[in-house]
Length: 291
Image (cartoon, rainbow, N blue to C red; front, side, top):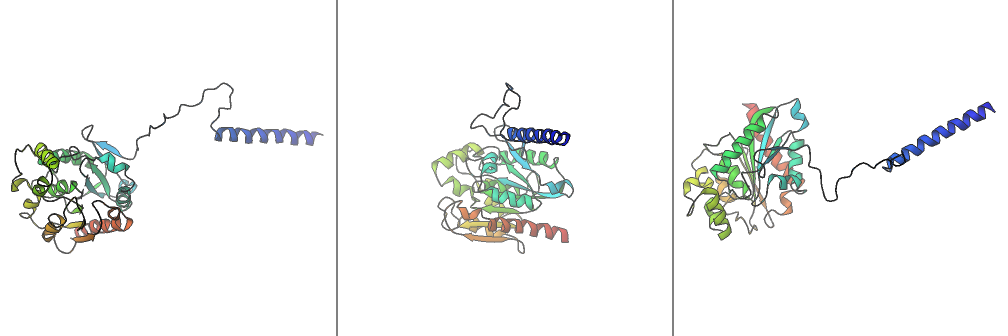
């Protein structure tokens, strides 16, 4: 009888324990009348905690650091966004995450730049703001001394300008995807672009060659370049932008990727493209290491 009572008591304890686990798994309070935990309102998403905001509110930049940077210094890639977008739009884009995830996994810190606003078109004033954000970012991780630029569409102008003499920070290589490089060609492309460029640069007329990143690049030393462009791009003509710039690329590490399809099509953001982009930056890292 004593043994049977012990077995019955043990069975009751186990049953209560299993019941408690089931109740907790369903999110129900095991205490009668206890209030349920507050829930996030429908449609409200928590902000990702792994991206650190930097810079001016409303046009902030976002920094993400690979775990490997905590024990080994790493380089920084500054990403300049397309027209009418932002750092947050790039962060939240499932398409663009293919590139950022590959960069982070390859030991590159990533700064999604606010570029001073959604339509700054690579202006010198906007670059000054990016320079301040760049300086703030470098205080947040173990930097190895190398910064690279990646410009997407309109962001190509900012990426290219950041690599020219007079930039507030040194850029060791520039990657461009469907990117504008000729400011005056963008000015002449449409009335809306003309108005945006006039406002960003404080101009009344067409930008002079001294403000055009493409014209200034032709006067500067040759650059390590990764250019991906499509002859089918109806938004940014490859012939007068990426293809016109590429003859100024330095030999040995530069790469031109001929694409097909429309502006910022899906083949720009594949794992293969991400690996080619990382390969370009790694070639530059290896070149510096050999020196």
